Length: 349
Image 1: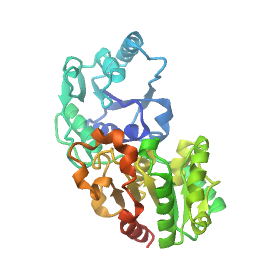
Image 2 (image 1 turned 135 degrees about the vertical axis):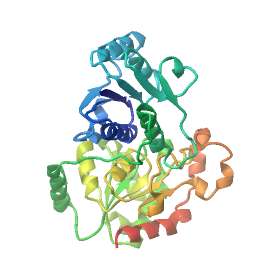
Image 3 (image 1 turned 120 degrees about the vertical axis):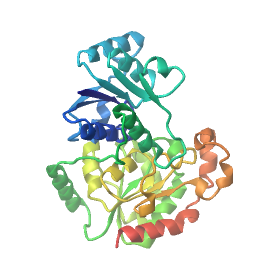
Image 4 (image 1 turned 30 degrees about the horizontal axis):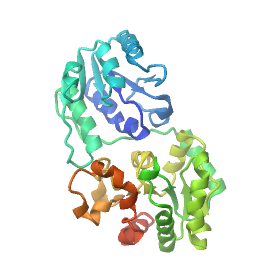
């Protein structure tokens, strides 16, 4: 049995869909599982024991109907028995269809019934929607119930040791070390700079910790602007110069931290996949339950505007994307100060 799982684009999505690979591998004895992703997301699936082969989707090379048709025909050579399309956009729908697989599973839309042999309708209101959707795809492909699992990142021991050495050389390991998701994937997914600075002040006033920032070199000016807004006592606890230069290095570095605190995004999903506690500040227009897992444990905590202003949300959160900046102004750190302090103390016992 040969199975292809398709998940193009974002790092968090690619990581999330590894549960499909794991579920298929555990339930189909001897199955060969291939995973189609984009190259920049490979670090989150590297060394995953439930993936036999990684294929790469090249956005420019495979652009347009004719190229997608050709790509799908090239997949046909693999003779897949099952294709599971977790992305469900034309870049994946057409290659999945032209792969010639007997079973093609994906998200139900009025037109996908012409391309998939089985479709699913996700539960938009359940907790951990993103994870539940992928397990539903797996269940539908297998035709039976599957166990609840969550994404995991599989680091090699040498990668962990390298990260430990780097932290020892650059940080005061006598103090708890927190990774900070200082910026979101866009401005409309990032807490306003003044509020992020206040959040960092709250952390350092609660516990004597060391803060590391997750950012790319081209984001340095934005990061410095937040740093400059912090109290001087907080600035002294921030190691601004020490950061991972590659995604896999960041993952290894994150695995050695006591927690990740900050904006919701790929870094949060990676921390959870490493079993590192997280305190996540969601953008007002992102659905609170979409990526939430194990909140009841107290080690994967969430802050969302709807927690404090539920009356604002008369429709699904995504309908308020245009109000992101206006509504972010309502999410003042004083609202979640006690919750943040409790989290910091809980994970540093």
